[in-house]
Length: 110
Picture 1: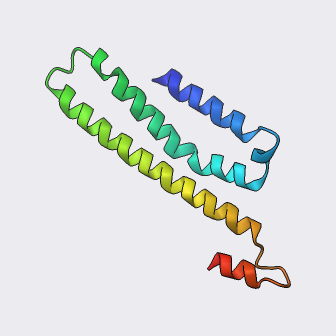
Picture 2: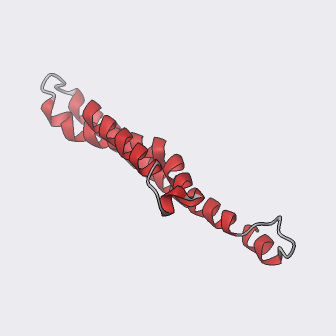
């Protein structure tokens, strides 16, 4: 599990420092907003996959599987909300309300 979380951290760092479209505001916002929920999703998925390897859990295995499935569902929902928020922020960056002729930008922001 630690290896998966470490690999996730390395991937996030790599994505944050890539040149090109991710270097602009939208890509960095997406990486920044999705860092924590994607870490939760990776950790929950790895724990769920590793659960059958735990032999000493006995009767708790069903409850643990259920709890991890709920955490995974919640993490995916959180990730989707953060991705939508990053998209909205990227759209808001594209339309500057401080511009002189900002009618269209105000309409988009509203």
